Image (cartoon, one colour):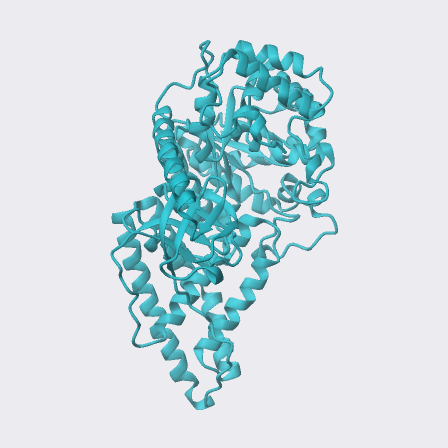
Length: 594
């Protein structure tokens, strides 16, 4: 058998080894099948019965997942029921059947293709992933048009699941540690339901393998390395033995990391730090806490716009925020107001395309231009704040006037709630994202009006160095250890600390152990990151003295290049704390840093 190595994106760490099992998927018809116009009503009745069967199926699935996996994953089916009951979706299907006199299968195929095209046109990975929810519902209705359904074979053996993609309901039903060793998909991303669920269940997963379903057949032997994002098909015995050893070491390391989640967040010299989580879905909050998060440092509220094909209501916003606030209470949750516009377009808002969206109408600029929408969101955030653990975070601020305008709208909304006698936290903090150079340079001014700062290092570094990190021609210039970048971040941290207010880093720098050490040395104490990285970063920071890092950073910032700084910091840390990088996979010299 041929040995093949495939590279993808690791979205759930760990190593899985075993036989492959290919998942079948619904294929929407490409055949337009006309019907007699006199039979249109019969066809609509047939569609209605399929919708009713789908509704019944979704309710059952919800109950099953709630009892077997937990409420945090059952919510997927609430969202799917909302899609199924969306009058605009069902109206569109009926219109196609009635106007074109065609079979329901063709109508479902057309609607699915239409929305796939819309979602595929979006640049934002997170939003592109949400098309799976709509396809999932349409596929269920499609299957339920059949009167008799073929049953999936049950093997009773744990295997590596291979598929083109897993729709959300398929992921919720298929992924179980009792039956699935690992997951390998042609498509997908880190924010897909499959990735989130795999991480929650500790099932190694690699997505974005492009065409693994064409290379693999049932029964092939696979190794899935979810840590580095690689899948090996039919590897020789020597490779299998090597990975058996790696898997045992990794499992032991993960067990140790899990223990770290319960330990104090404190350096060797007794300095406290706070690990927080960046999340995109409400159900991630509980998992984040289990991994050691001491609150939610960034909730990306754009998720709410993907629960429905309609613009979300105040109740939709409130239900989401209140759920997270309750889950993490009394620990804090930082809710970032909607950061759409530009490349993060959302179909139901009909946002016009811009020639340079990254520099266009996005973040707070969009909210101030759409004030009713902004007021509605702030009102929901305030209503969810009665437990006094909610904070508001304003994105893409570039000048003090924007913050003042946002504050004025915030106060107007508070007045409205007081008149309506609705309880909220009168002292709810409002902070600013520092993600453009202008905001960083004005940090000492902004912090006088803001209650806290949050540094978004991904955008800040891109804007500051004028580098698109997804552009293969220039991405090598994206360097988080660039001396100019570190000096800028140091100044922002100093400005907040001088004002006696908190500052968090919520970009990817916080999730890298070496970068987190540098940030600690620059004075940072609050780190917000993808929850899966919390144990690793916490272990690294617990292994060092703050004094060592502060001294190393003072000297490093006089160096000329990112490479010199990185090498100097690694050497300084290794000299004093040789265990700091042990088993972290980030032992400095072995990894090329971007």
